[in-house]
Length: 412
Image (cartoon, helix red, strand yellow):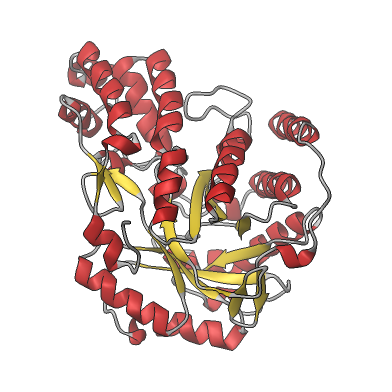
């Protein structure tokens, strides 16, 4: 209870510090018209863009890790490798360097119109996360990104990629192996509190297209997956009601169960006139049959459907799939914008000595003895972390022109 009270008090203070302006009219926001999105100027919006994955919700594979694959696991590994103070400093510098104004300018220059921002709920709490022990910097980070997007004419979708208690039960939600959000009333209250505070802060922000309540809820690995699926609609209703207490302007996005792929649990979710749906797809065929269930659900509900994540495939596959999505009026944001190596809009190279950190992340570290045995040269690992901060800066990244052109955009 103390955690929630502190969180709410912090948010109230942050909100009170924002300058007051006249509220924009309803027609200043992106709106829903049947299965279409419509911009304030009356033009249809077909979403094309990318995801800022790994920035505010680090994922192991985007650093070259495999076993150490969620934010809290990566953080623990770095603390074991170089110590807590250096790990904290790394995360703060990482947040300042991984996505900057230059990245947003570049994204806009390709002809993209939308960015999806995955975030960990902890950036809006007083829990330890990415180098901060309390008074997290979530609002400061989002405020800055909103400003950059506004300057470049980009829309922004806020995606709670990691929810209190975990909504997925796997590494992607930074949980502990089970989607406890669906069973914990405390986690559900915090989920609603965070969305209410986000919506109150940004209710007049027309740059924000909408709020995506949960990313990829309920992995398929659990014996009680049907019971969990049956609770998804109620969790979504709780989140919608919390947002509507303070914000009636913005669209709310709902994703299907099992990797945003199963929409059967969402039948009857049109309990608000500004709800749309979001699907994900990796691999498989490229014809309309590959996304037939998404198209059918879109047509049955009469609401827009948008492909929030897609990617990690050949140029030819991505190009063909983009044509299919365009033909079937399903906009898209490709995953991810930036990662180590390739298969992204821009890639960064592993710095010299990075393999030592990769090997430490792979090693057995279940006891203090194993940590000592696995740990290499701490000074060398510190240098590698410093070098990574330089490597991720936009000016040091490699632009994959063929990738960007394959998804219907271009490098000018």
